[in-house]
Image (tube, rainbow, N blue to C red; front, side):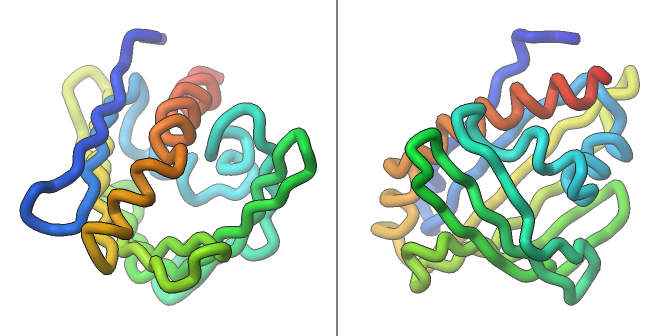
Length: 159
């Protein structure tokens, strides 16, 4: 496993969007499965200090989800959304909402790009309703959750 894999997170200067890119030492089918299999998702999504429980998980086109992250202080953070497109091993399009800020709905597209050597580049694009909402998301601790979550995903994929 390559522990030097870097996550790139950038704010798009032309639209209220965030681009996230990360490579994994696993084929697209495995990385995709880790995004749709609830038993795997709870093992990697978010920072280590949070525990995840899933209330609803229907990863198919037209399906939806709701989950909760619980902190060490028992603070709960609820998230929900709809799966707009689920294309096996290739692409996920979903909405993403933090229940505490219900007017900030993001539309996220994740593309799973096959690389030589059985590797994958995950390309994420998340667009929100305004530049202010996008910037608030970036300042919310999102980077910590994404970077640490992908480190955890490396561990899941290595098993």
